[in-house]
Length: 245
Image (cartoon, rainbow, N blue to C red; front, side):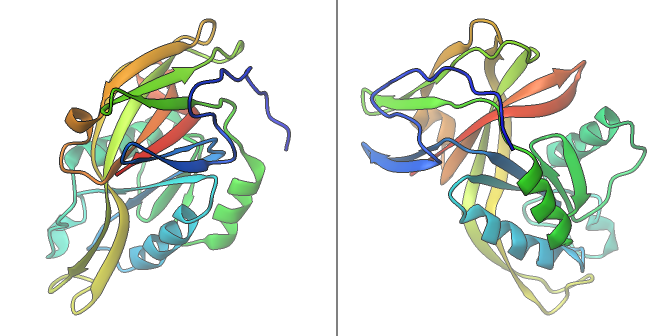
């Protein structure tokens, strides 16, 4: 599938197909083609299959994979140890953006535009094959601790928010109650927070310096997402990159 490409800006670290490279202690990955966001729960019996699929997708060169644990399954007898109410609100915001009246788990969202059952591998693979991010991001590490993000303009796109999504790389959780009682579940790229760090202008682009130690905190890494606004709701994601310790 052809995609509209913005002109590349050259920095000390130039984007390739999700090119990874150490930079003063950080691993920078740019050139992403797909962002996969999984809404999952430790209390959901169908979720472990989707969690495993997300882990496999996250090992692909051009995929940014993120696991958002939601809290509306907690009532069934097991409180998800990674659940955030903000994750539930994000999933509801996606549903509202698409004119849907309900949310479910496991749900995968591809590039902020397509939602599907997260355990249906064929549907997920079809979505990955049929959609690509339009914008390449460049990131360079400066002064040992600052990440310099440059996102060029892309005429035709809408005003967008630059999000920093922190995550824990992996974890195992023994579950003693609920639908997954007796199982030890494995997770990857567990979202711990999501904050807006700036705006992206489709005409002029944006240039942002991120203080990495303060931004990452105790986390293993972060995804940088540029996501269009649908009014006050989330729209399609147009560009993405990852920074990891």
